Image (cartoon, rainbow, N blue to C red; front, top):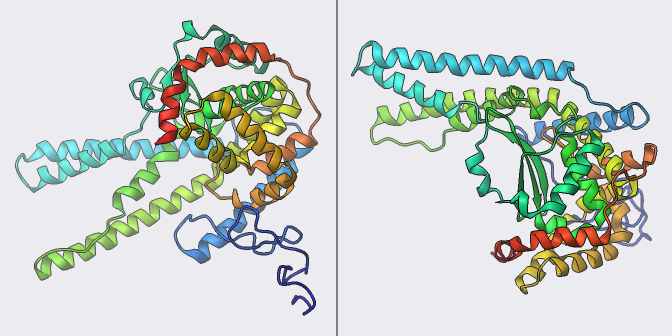
Length: 420
């Protein structure tokens, strides 16, 4: 519908309501969502298919939210999605192992021949596609290891939160430099790791810190399909195949070399396209389970820190860019955690009136078939619609200050990282 000529230029051309530019470069309408999908996530690289997949992801995301908002929310140990992902992982492992065995046989069958070269190539391919379980030795690259003996207040808080949500204690604590936090398991022994970004920790209020720990530790017990030893194979192997065969460039001095490079590049792109398509199908199947696990982790955040703190923690996600900006500004000025907290508190207060707009925007901009997390807006709304919970763990200002004192030893290093 075309807006009447009397409507100001800033009015929506579809519904004639005022448009805004909050969060996007071009105006969009919060009343009818006109022009809100200015950027569609790239999945296959063909815009018309990506737009269709975006709409599919949007329908799936909204349908799952509707199904879970008023129903039971509990961990699932075995679902159709998990069974399919496990089966795909087993097949992929078998294929990689088969490639390795074939390569080994060809390498030694007629040594120093064309078969030897082909065998070496297959062995190299199997090595590149091998499952990665992560290494403890690589963890210092992601953050500074926290000496548990020198952080008794932090360890005590983590223990209390773990008990509240029924999760095992992490065996390694990392302190990162980003406005982020995560848990993971690494190695054959599946060592549990909790990483908390110091900038994120410093910008949160005490009960939000408890909710953050509740959410992250909840990932150890929420049945997330991404966390399994086998299911990780399906999540990563196909993407490596696509990257391995996505050959670029056509070269060669002679006509034969030129034609060969064209054929090789075409075959590589076909293999890469098949791998990407299969990956999309697996993601399509598994990501609903992953997003369900995120909702459950939010429920555990509410159980640990209280529903109110879990909601404000989730709302901070839609303010991340603004909070990151003020934290880096303070870091460039040489200021530490106290200044980050004060600057973030001012930024959150200034952005509070825009939270409804930022939530609405996130329902569209955070949707993708590859998205393992539901949009922040739906996570906050899920918490609001479910029964409110009182905090099982209370963190006082004095206790929070003790923890900050324990972490202050890492402050200068994080400031240097933020200044870079």
